Length: 87
Image (cartoon, rainbow, N blue to C red; front, side, top):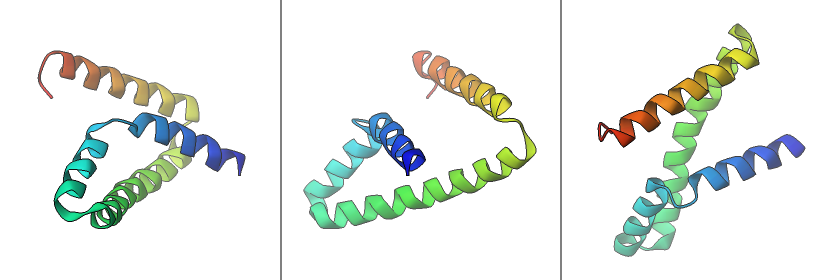
């Protein structure tokens, strides 16, 4: 249960105020909060199941430290691309 809480807090804080939340607000203004909420849940669940399955397989193939380093490099690359206006 402690792991689930840690993952919840990390994802909640990472997603707070991001473009997905803004898009959900826009959809809610057009379709109502229930439709936007359930659509957002389904969309996020689909994306996260893909990430969880890939992460599970990567965890079987690579050491955790290497996965963390690769993820860090990917975040840095995306950050640089965003600053450069490429994303």
